[in-house]
Length: 116
Image (cartoon, one colour):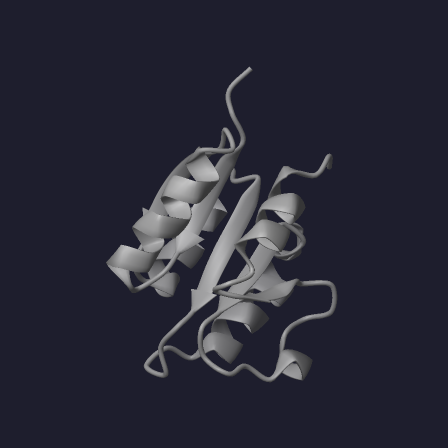
């Protein structure tokens, strides 16, 4: 049986590789996407078991990304964790999507490794 697949969406390569390293230590096969818009296309074509979306830049319309997931890819949204290193208005995150800070890696790993 192949390992669960995780997509890390993060424009910051150093943080993306940090997240990928942590997640892969827990047995997940990790793919990194540096831009959320190609990542949305990838999510339509490839199966992923979990998505880590790092909100780290004001240059990306995060509301648009989350709304697109909610509208077009609700099954993926259920498997998404938002990692916020910028202040984020959690009321703008769809209900049920966990929002964690970059120092909350243990709760993130608990969430990622729980039985689904």
